[in-house]
Image (tube, rainbow, N blue to C red; front, top):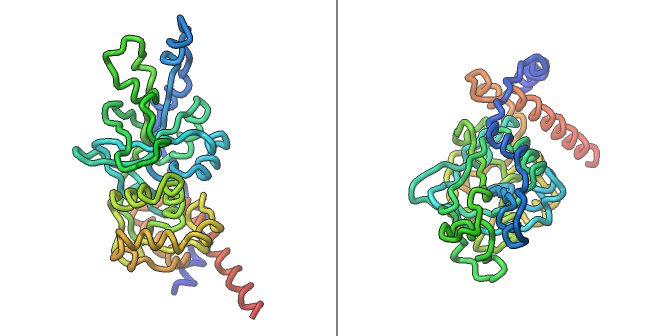
Length: 320
């Protein structure tokens, strides 16, 4: 049944029309193009008047290696850990590749840890393209705090432009020149069998958290909503990753450590994680596509994974 379904999809997927994603960061793109410096009166004022644009990374953007895939200059860029008030992290961003990515929602009283990354105009434009299923929104500077549970002094910077700009009493500061942006998914939808949470993606996020501390990684796991305890809604795809920026070598080396961290905080949900089966995923995607709950591009992506899995399997049989 599945094989005939697969053959049908292989024959028809190339004829499916891809629904174009509306590029939701129009205002953000305009802001990126218009980033320019003011002429200062003195060096001190120049530092404050120079435009500062920051992106708040709360998922894969916390990982330097992942950021560098989008723009190599970002791998060594300072990433200051912060906590944003009234923002809640949740698995809710439906990818056109057939999985659920990290998203956020505004909720009074919530908190979301992440990192602030300063970006230039071209880097901001690159990130807008990367985050095509998200809209870029400004964050109020007063909602940004330093992370209270981090003990290392290197993670605290009272002189950071974002925290200096919170001081409205200082007339030397040009508060309007400090902008912090957050990417929010356009159409929030929870994970399901057709768009599961991929472990390869979780690994990249936790890899980024661990560049700061284990406590920071634990905070990510504890404060993230939407971990699914339904079967097939969270898949272990480390060997055949769905996520396009996965690092299979890293996952192979550190997967056990990451699983132990996950088990500490989302044990019940982790027990429902299943081995990724690209053929079953393709079947679930086909059903979702008929209900307009999937992107046709996902079919093409998973077909590639099916072929890779079949090739890997045949090579393994030959070795036996």
